Image (cartoon, rainbow, N blue to C red; front, side, top):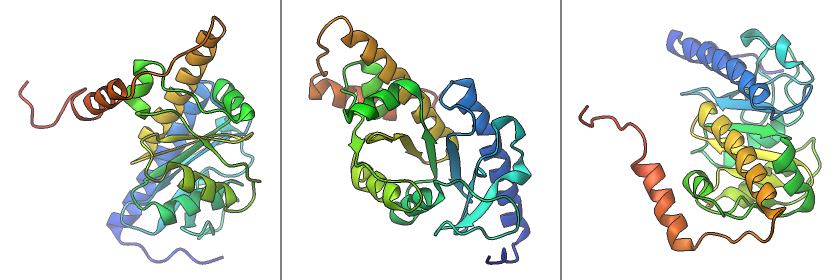
Length: 234
């Protein structure tokens, strides 16, 4: 195991804040019923470093603490003594190495989205909320076995250049990316919500994808106009 290098006070503080944030956000996965037992995980880059913080393997959500979060390098190797990292760490690490714009990765087996993954079927962009958040269909990534970086390779190959921050890995589950852990968790919550809505709609008949021009307009508005913007008048 590589020893954690000496950190400046600023970096040490950033690492501690990342531990706390990643630990706390795992509660959102259980709150929104996106995981069961010990499945699922969140990771986030430590600002200004080549390190990530990720959930420990096989630890129940109620037992997670900031101290139990595992610090790894960008190849998935733990850099200090403590818990073993998630079995998905190599996949997360590959995403960080290949997509430097990504600040966080989330993995869930949420029921409805994973049902689409089990069919190997993308979720069509059929409702405005989906156009807002995803700007496209939620795509399906290739089947890959857990334990190495093959899943990470599939995530990158599918999401690089794609508007969607979520991918349904074939017969596996959901992976989402974001600029930070909160945005990646939001994408996981929204992925399950739209997967459920479109599934229920299809029980009553065919569901048509929104016209591309409407998807483009909705996505642009939500990403660039919606919400509170810094510097705007009160």
